[in-house]
Length: 322
Image (cartoon, rainbow, N blue to C red; front, side, top):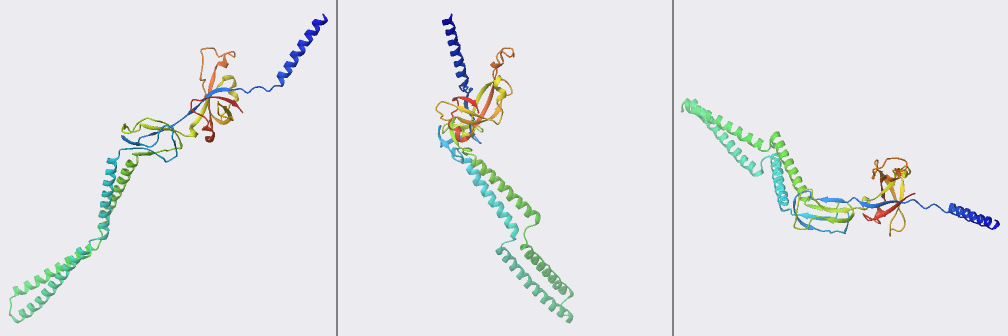
């Protein structure tokens, strides 16, 4: 009996020591399974046309504003040239209405004005002579009337030429000038539109990142709005993981989590941005307390851009709460 009691005492002692030691050990962290995912930026053709150049390929790292691809643009370039010519024409017409007639044209009017003045002097002298002769009875009253008519005619002609000289120095009428300005503005807008359409034939990178894929080859026809390349910027890399229903209350949007992956080195800190409102996986079981652990909810966390480059889309990860 003594030996049996000693054995039981020793066993209880070992169990007690084991329990104490087990209680002193730190609890292992709780891991949630997930994977990295990227949201690439798809760069599309803004107009349809044949792809003439593709300056990047899959795997290349591009900076914002770097040239990506271009399409055939002969028609758009011709439209720009035509619009530039129409704008120059409209501006010239508007300037012509603002300045009046040209100097050579005014010189012609001045010559006509000098001739009209000379004719007026001549007809004035003739009328004076005719009046003298009529007073002496050498000419008829009809001859005197002809001299007076000629003088009136020359006076009217001089007034007409003087009016032409004055109007030649004036700009066009207000309505004409307004119409010319409107026409020049319309030509300017048409040129801007043509330049935009030409610029749309060459695409640059809207983001900095890695080229994930190209969907067309040089020489192929690309439709309007069709993606030609996809680029993944670091800020578009996120982690999706799944949390059981029983642990959902422990995670909140805006909090940080730690991401662990093979070959990533130190854990990566990421901020929770999205928590699904509905269960990601709902097996056909009753929602009893014994089965709630089978429900999992999708959670998305976004690491900083400098750390996101350590992750690769599709890579499995483990997530722990901080």
